[in-house]
Amino acid sequence: MIAGITVQQQINNSSWLSDTLISQMKLLQVTHGLSCLIDDVDLLFADLCYQRHIPYSVIVSSNDFETSFAEPDQIKLYHTLVDHALYLYRLGFSHPSRAAIWAAQQYMVDHCALLFSVWDGKTSLGTEVVESVMEYALHHKKKIVQINPETREILPINS
Image (spheres, rainbow, N blue to C red):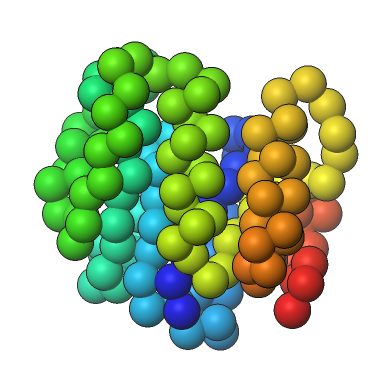
């Protein structure tokens, strides 16, 4: 199954999230990953695929997206993951923007069967992207698994 990921916010316990994603990837028989490499969790998901020899593809929303990462380790991992992706889709936006990120997320949903949504389920400032991605995925009849980092619940949304 081809899986993508969308994320609400940065996660404090990436070890728990990593273990959870690995177990869900095994359980749901993920055979290919899709990542927009937008933030730490997107990087984590692609890196889990890379480390476990699961083919993955990267959707690069803008030509200089790596400039949105502040830490040298993030930039290095970003380039490693881009270099080792089975497929690389460049959307061609000139700079990072909401429109570029939305286009990348739509592309990911259009090409996956399963969406991991790392979200606490609460509506707040900054959650409109993950909510929109989930609505888009539901509209397109994609399977969604919500991973709630606050409660550590794993909820199938529409299995």
